[in-house]
Structure formats: structure tokens, C-alpha cells
Amino acid sequence: MALHTWLIYFAAALGLSLSPGPNGLLALTHGALHGRRMTLWTIFGGSFGFVAVIALSMFGIGALLQTSLVWLTVLKWLGGAYLVWLGIQVWRAPALGVELMALSSERGGWSLFRQGALSAMTNPKGILFFAAFLPQFIDPARSLVMQFLIMAGTFAGIEVITEFVIASTAHRIRPWLERSGKRFNQACGGIFIAIGAALPLRA
Image (cartoon, rainbow, N blue to C red):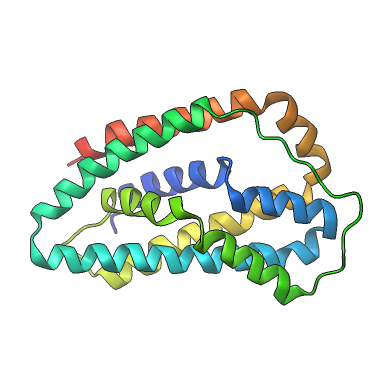
């Protein structure tokens, strides 16, 4: 993957990780309930789930590309349209509210890992998003396996860091999200709309 392409992917992946979603909410909740050290299990589980979804999306796309490279262009334009639509939905979404249980039951590390992984893998929008997002960065002339390692590793690393920060500052972030969540959603929605509109036009 070319450096400039990776930098664009990094910025887009960072925007995705910072946007409201089930795994960010789970990290926020578990951070407040179980503390940041235990929440690492949740975070690593979520990253594992995202890597699995990225693999399914990328190698499914790769199989399609073996049929015809025209499909890459089709996927880019369909994906761009989906990202614009998703951006509009995020923009219009109500502020994220978080309600925590007053008392939490003790949970083991593997239980938290499983929750994080299932949250990432069972989100019906996950595969749709990555199927729209990843074709914008795939170079059919390069090794798909190497591109997968770079893209999945980059996304997993960003996800671990951002969710750990969320979990570590759970008590301080929650009031801010309740107060400024609508503007935050609009900023994230704007990022998705810009990505969806610009990336299919990139050579």
C-alpha cells in the first residue's frame, strides 16, 4: 500500500473509531463498571471481531475482483453512496445517552472478550460498512494478503487505543456526550459524507 493511500486510510479509520457505535459504547460502559484494566478484555475482543469482519469483507471483495476489475469501480461508487447515506443517518441521530446499572455483577475476562467480539461481529451494519469502505483503498495490482495485514492491523491498533482512552475517561466523557453528543454526531456524519463523496473520484 502506497504511503499516501495509507495516510488517507489512517485518517478515515480514526474517524470511524471515534464515531458513535456499539463497541465504543460498550467500552464506555465497561470502563465505568469494571475499570480500564478489565475493559482491555472487551477492547481486544472488539478488535478481534473487527479483524474478522475486515477479513470477510476484503477476501470476499478479492474473490469478486478475480471475475472482473470493473467490479472494483462499481463497488467504489456503490460504497461511496452508502457512506454518504450513513453519514446522513449519523448526522441526524439523536445525542448518545448512556445509562449505566447502579450495581454491576462481576465478570471474567473471557466473558468481556466475548462481549466485545460479538458486538463487532454481529453488528449488521459492520460488514456493509467495511464492504463500502475497503474498496476505496484496495490496489488490485498489489498482494491482497499484505493489504489485509496492513489495513486490519492499522484499524485494530487505532481501535484499541481509542477505546482504551474512552474506557479510561468513562466518567468524564459521559457528561460531555450527553451535553454535546448532537454536535459530535454531526461532525462524524460530515466526515462520512466527505469520504463517501470524495473517495470514488480518487484515481
